[in-house]
Picture 1 (tube, rainbow, N blue to C red):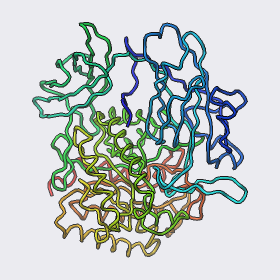
Picture 2 (picture 1 turned 90 degrees about the horizontal axis):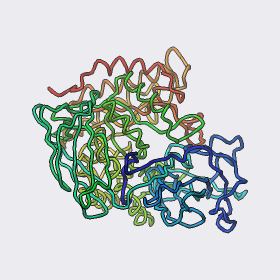
Picture 3 (picture 1 turned 60 degrees about the vertical axis):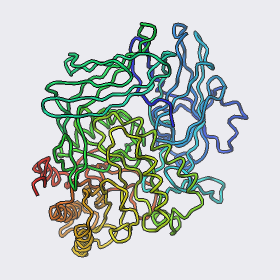
Picture 4 (picture 1 turned 180 degrees about the horizontal axis):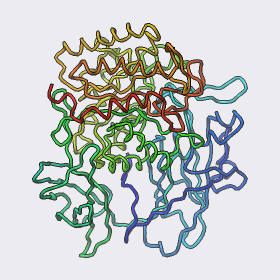
Length: 603
């Protein structure tokens, strides 16, 4: 677990310089880089953009599919006037495990390709001179790691990733790298919880620092007017006549924290927060005590050329597409996204189901991709996997807990919950994560098609249910779609007859669709069939009061591994990979823009 996950800021006490741009890059198939001295830097590699996945820049397949160790290195200058500060290098993500060197000195290692980590480099850097940062990264997949998979060796000696998940294993420095200076005595974290009404909002805050000191905290509105102040490591900020953060109607206040030592301010940190509450009551999802019906998408950080890299231009387009179509939510499938995505969602009033990269925990899914058909939780890798799993849950919640956009935590995607061996794992996972979020947001995970109401052994754990269901595509497809609808209704009737009183959100459903393919009458892969499938699901959704959200798979087409089930990726997007609408996008827009935010609240 990281000591601090605060997003970088620039003020009188802190600086932030991005080290983005072209880095020197090398493959290291024999893992000889350290013997060759690459930790000291090298100049004979190729120039690789950061942030970016390395894969799609290459035109030869061995490079695109490369699996193993690879290196990045870059020079950076450190001014003399930074002396007296602590120097850090913060990596937004390195897929999937990394070792950081500065001026040849090993600083730290980190596992987990979708969350930030910080290297404290104060003792390794030289002031007033050039310095060298080198990173050895490994993108192999293993069953005891997140996301899960295997790494095989072909007969020609080349290694190959075999994911147990249905998206491409894009790798590299996918997010920005920051050179930071921070005070030696500094703020390391803060947390907020809320009580709200139309007349008054109270922000309960707690601050942590690496030293004993005093704290001053203030809250300012969007005009910069200070509306509340407090002192102490914990306390209350009371706002009269507040403007609340609401879905698709966001309002952000700025919280500023000052660290006071011996009567002098030694550090400040500011952030934007929204005043709002989240609750689950019965089968309702409540924001500010008002019922909310979710409409939105599963998404991927995926775009042409840069792969899984964060691209602010793509994100701006995606947010505009979601607003255009009438969405109010998305799931960060199947990993935590770049922090800037959540900041976008905070500003736009979009709710986020934040998902840890615990995907591929199902051997039947692995079988779909060439693996084995057995219970995943019977494997001897489970103990080591769990340590990595809970560590990344802790870091995800620590990083994202103060975002008003974050609605819930998804702790796993499509795990095998149909066997008793899953129960001890999920018991521990939910127990160990229970106190991590001060706001006590709901926790959940997605149930795939094998984990039905009758078969799943883990229905007791989620605060609300996420169902991934694919009648009309992976089974009962084409002309059999009417049988698919009937079977789906049969399962939902079982949910309805049970004593479970929790919301159900459909977090995945859809049909692969080749843009521009038209057929009368429809056939699978045609744009007409995608609309027919959505119409079928919408009929079902409108028939059950406890269904409180619909998030089709996927916002946009995305890259996957090669396979006879895929034609250059997953084509279930309502938009193409270059973010243009398919016909179904116009159908869904007509539905979603007519649905009230509190749809079904009176039922």
